[in-house]
Image (tube, rainbow, N blue to C red):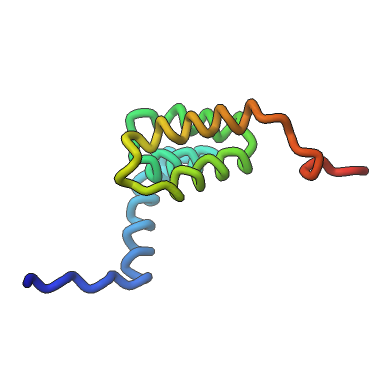
Length: 106
């Protein structure tokens, strides 16, 4: 039996994240751009990163996060394309009528 690889420490994971972010930092000027790149990374769809940046600029963050959590909650073997599932759920959430509980009364 081959020896399994020990889990990486949080410090190592933070260093990997920082190195990835530092490579992109010179191109990122706004927060929505950083979040769009994080979406592209989470969905493994770097070829459409400009689409995710535009979505982050024009779409409510709560809707984007709900769609992303929907994708993350699914079994990875059952998903053909994370990006397609994300876009489907995003459209479904946008088309849904807002609940009465989410409205604020002033």
